[in-house]
Length: 100
Image (tube, rainbow, N blue to C red; front, side, top):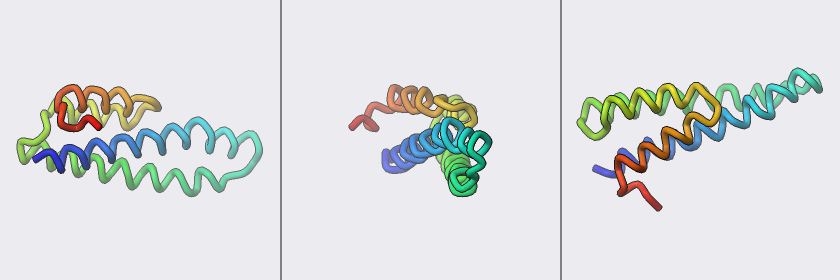
C-alpha cells in the first residue's frame, strides 16, 4: 500500500521544512528582533505535523507497511533540523515507489 508510505513521506518532508524554518528563521527573529509571530505560528504547526507523522509511522509499522528502523529514523529526524531530509532519503531508498 504505497499511499500510506507516500503520506508518511510527505508528512516527514513538511515537518522537516517547518522545523527548519522554525529553528533557522522564526526563533532567531523572535529573540534578535523581538518578533514572536513566526514562533507562535510555526511552533504549533511543527507540533501538529510531528504528532501526525508519529501516528502515521506507528500505524505504518503495525500494519506492516513501514520498517520499525525507518519509523525510528523518522522520529529522530523530526527532532533535528535537516534530519527529516535524511530520513526522507532513506525512506525513498527503502521504498523506490515513493520517487517522483
